[in-house]
Image (cartoon, rainbow, N blue to C red; front, side, top):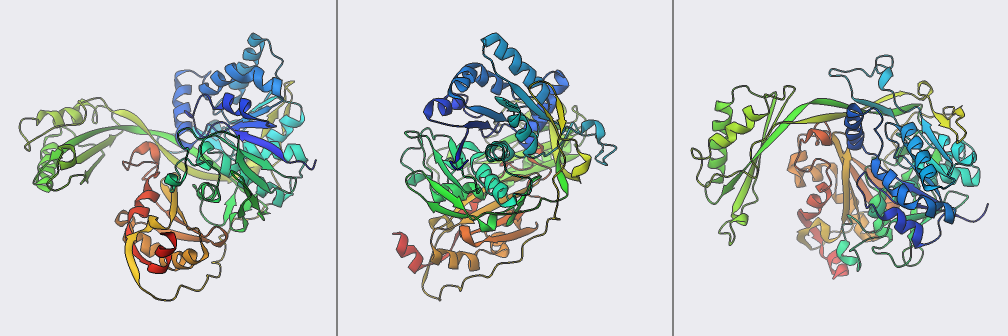
Length: 571
């Protein structure tokens, strides 16, 4: 088949726009519609759902969307592939069959399973104290391919890699072989761009002020060709924009270096080339692929204990002294000290402020312990008891409350051959999917040759974001910050200026941590991985920005000396 296959996306996370499935189906022609509902935190949420009811564990919003749109999808000949099955893909598949029966439509449903390893944690060396609530390996696309080859209208998976829901339809459409690594890698890159939905069409974009219509961005489409190259676009008349910038930003989201490893292929991000191919059309070409690593990543979520928080509002003068008094009073009067007690003072106050809010700082105290009583009223009531006996202007942002459970994410790796990968076809037949061979151990790429630096000249001290865009995100306890520029001269300056040491100077909170830089010349980008900045993952609430979504914008706001010649070109 020579014509590209058109694969749309209608969800980037569990909680995304409910109307997006109908918008994508009504907006124009598609061959496939995909949805990504899973994230590290989502697996914890679904795990808690399953504790309450073993029949749950899947993304319930997908079922609501299917009730509204299943008939429309069948009428238009659009096949649906989604990871909304979460911890219970068989349960969601059964619910979809019942829904189709109730709606009176003839939909064939298949699902992919085998990723759930919770009953094998001891055998696989994944056990911990406390034991994990969820343990799911990241499967690839070949189970999806087998289901589509069997004629499924809807394929539901558990934990596959985010891009797999796009790679599967492309591989099935073109009949790619398992060792067509260049083609598969191209589809992985296209999938990585669209799997986060509107982040590819202007959402969370550093230069958002340059996009005229961002009130309701449209969801993205990947037109993938037989050779693995692709064009990223969106339906005509929808909001947002598809530009080299918006695609670059998403390519840098939650990645590390030039090798982007998955269960089916290791995609070489350093080979990807982007070209604006018309309004709202960006072509991705040149992506090379390599054999995948011999292990699969496993997402482990553990209910680690309970947490609570008290936020004190400190207004006006003597902010540091008020914070010190509060801390002494709380810590001296706790009946039992929590296992973790973290204090953070956010100096959001301004001198001689013209509103009370801008004259105020926030002092946050976070308590964590395995015993819910230690971080419950025994903690929060102490904060309230000093309302008339502490600093002048005492107030809290919320009344006292009980502690809430929190989770901890960790990543592990197991031999791919030890993880079952099963396609359950529409007729109920279970087909085992073999692990991909050959494999190749993952190694970092050597540092590429850098361009010559700009000649010295006058500079002006301005925010980094005057020239550079950034996109940041979380990977367990680590965070990444991808930074890119838009011209060759800007690149010559950026790559020699924004080193790992420079990031540590600009972002003081990263100084005690390991920061590693990866260079991606074709994207004019550098990517930084900051280890441990998020503690034990998003659910542990180690930072006020627990998913590091604003980390890149903080870096862009920092001032440094930028050559006048580069600034003049932007004015």
